[in-house]
Length: 119
Image 1: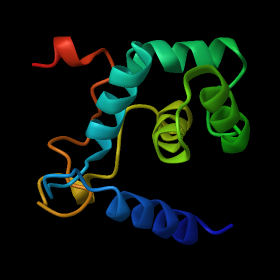
Image 2 (image 1 turned 60 degrees about the horizontal axis):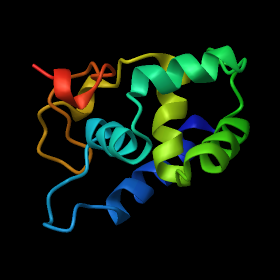
Image 3 (image 1 turned 90 degrees about the horizontal axis):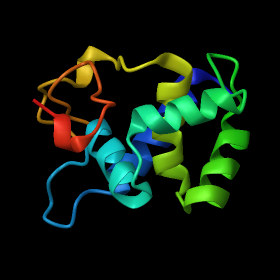
Image 4 (image 1 turned 180 degrees about the horizontal axis):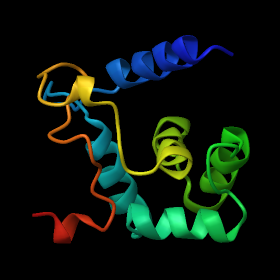
């Protein structure tokens, strides 16, 4: 599957899952929602994934999605957000930073160490 096609599918998913108040649901908001649901920070979940052998760019998304669904009840969209972090680290494309668009984030670096410690 071509990267552009994968990105458009993920973007469509984000578009469908705006917050109920109509504001955008950023990448960081997905990670925060994962922490609220699982009780674990994104960093803890990434470390857990790495301990299970899911590490780096060659990680197979389907396997991670299944593990996260089985263990924590996460849906595909939230699991894919974690897959991105597992495969690529905490950096995201800066074209969505400060745009006010659908996938608007405040920074090109995701905060992985917990909602309570955000500056």
